[in-house]
Length: 445
Length: 68
Ligand code: HEM
Ligand code: HEM
Ligand code: SF4
Image (cartoon, rainbow over the protein chains, first blue to last red):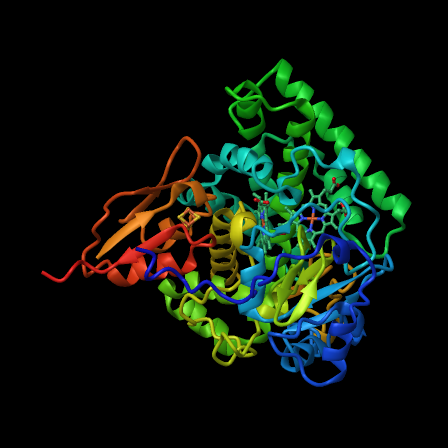
């Protein structure tokens, strides 16, 4: 029956039921240390983390479009890397495509961020931040919310938005042309398009964008102080709480209004969390993917030529840009709900595992010529949108936005080029979501 | 070929509809997969195989037709 399912891959389940005593305590099982001392790991000798060389998540890039090369070295060295987190905890890093997908689809790992460590310094995720934020929930809680939201984001529904997205993109392009070169594409094109689209979809007043753009930027920045991040989160929460109250008084047809009046048992706190999550995820991600994608194509005329010549190639080009650029640059995290053995290493209950999406998307074990941008690459099982039950809710919207916004941009502006040398483009090394801070361009009028 | 879906596992990512729109749809109620046909044609075979591969939660299963 299940014959041609995708192969059930990697993590080898712990053969022996874990001993509840050794589970929590410091690992000093002599058998385990002996095994470590006597040679390379095999699947029969399970090693604990205490024996492993510890590293921190590499974040320094040698090239703006490539993940840190150290990540690639770690992936070559072995499948499981012991990781030290900024909060002092120890956990694990996975870099291979097969393993990243396997853990993301494995119910023994939890997506709950409360109690999880982050590979980059972040203020703690608090219980009061959690209602409605399904990206940090497990089934059945997650299933309930995801099934409520999915009908608003189906493939056909998102594809039906194409004409509207095209009008929005064209209007922004016309404004760019009217004001003439040079221009920074971030505030004039790549940010406003997804921002306006998600505002219309949710029923958030676009006039408030300056405020929520600033809050999102502060919340996602790695260089703002903890207090600033908390202040930005709280401001966003207050804003959304007031918006939900307004929808209760005067519901409209957009998503939040429909959820408020819908036949469901959502609390106001949940509605507020859903609104925050969708608003932040709905514009920060696509905006950065779009700007970074445009920069990539501008600097790669060979690939741009293929993109422009072959109309039907746009969909493949979008997928390849997602894979190649993987803007969720530090990956995502999961916490083991029980002891799990991965490639001979015991991941203890409660330990955080970082799934490096950029490393997985450049894994030569899965992709042919992984470090090459090839906009004609056939559909490739990339993990830019994650995998498993949390795979991106907004992916079909992001695809439509990317395809249309890139097509309108490169069709509309002739001889689009950078207005500053490529190495002067400020890259978002300092943000949870990679991209560019500014994209100054010029074109032929 | 025959295709079946374990809807309890479906999270409505819509990858199947993206890759094989004439075989899969999504429900208006909860966004989970709806089979437009359980027996895709040979011509649909490649797109269905892609859809099965792309599904993030192993919802879809393909079996060959029993030999006649
Ligand atoms: C190119 C743009 C985008 C990228 C690269 C992206 C990436 C991702 C990734 C990697 C995840 C999984 C996180 C995890 O497993 O921990 C995710 C989940 C999610 N994304 Fe996106 N995303 C994009 C656009 C969007 C848009 C436009 C929306 C909103 C409309 C959105 C809403 C969400 C939501 C709500 C989740 C959580 C789903 C769940 O937990 O079930 N994303 N996204
Ligand atoms: C498209 C996918 C994603 C969506 C939808 C999303 C959205 C959000 C939202 C709305 C919050 C709550 C923030 C607030 O209340 O102001 C949040 C928190 C958080 N996100 Fe994401 N995020 C996504 C991907 C990721 C990924 C992949 C990581 C891992 C690097 C991450 C790390 C965090 C962390 C650590 C928090 C808690 C602390 C904080 O608010 O900064 N997110 N996310
Ligand atoms: S791709 Fe899989 S999870 Fe997504 S809608 Fe289709 S069957 Fe459901």
